[in-house]
Image 1 (cartoon, rainbow, N blue to C red):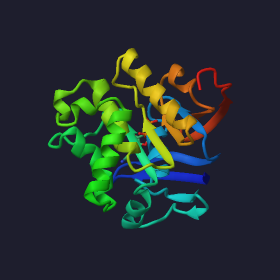
Image 2: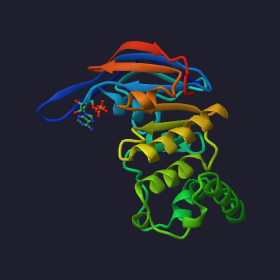
Image 3: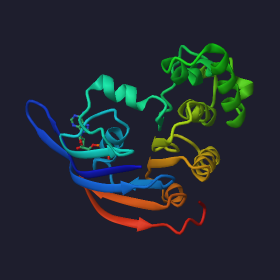
Image 4: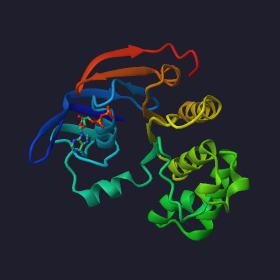
Length: 229
Ligand code: ADP
């Protein structure tokens, strides 16, 4: 599914240079559920952003389904993301001016799916996420748990092969966090590859492998027996 070789990422400002990733190599197979853990500032989000084609590495190779995608131009990255990669963020990142239906519909609009098909797929996905009754509500009228369910709906509406999640339960209480992890686990069992950054050992227990990052390097890979997965 994805393979990275010696990925490095250096952020340069006028005064300082930060080596956020110092040569990371990893192979994720289709259908795997990977958790990335490590202390704040160790490079987790940087890695996830590169895997999600939101950013390019400074050097190294990234193969997604056999294609080298590590050094694409922004427009090519955007095209490659569409329908292939779904994102979930800690802060939900919903568009406040759009209602639930419109937020979830957005990826399909970008993909130029026709309106009748969009309606069908959005309604199906909202049902699945148990949030249909909120279709005309705006994000600020929803609880955190509901907002994250909408964000998951938006991430999966285009049926991506891979979901990237950056601390998806970080802003939720334990009940809503559990619901979100149950949803991710179910999507994974149906074949979606998931790469998730988390601080939570509980959330990591849903994964097949935990990648421990420290100071921009992988310092250990822990296999999970999948007690919950
Ligand atoms: P984590 O997600 O593990 O908390 P990050 O990937 O956000 O860590 O950051 C890794 C390092 O790179 C940190 O030292 C951070 O300050 C730095 N960094 C991240 N993004 C940028 C950026 N856009 N510009 C400069 N430095 C950055």
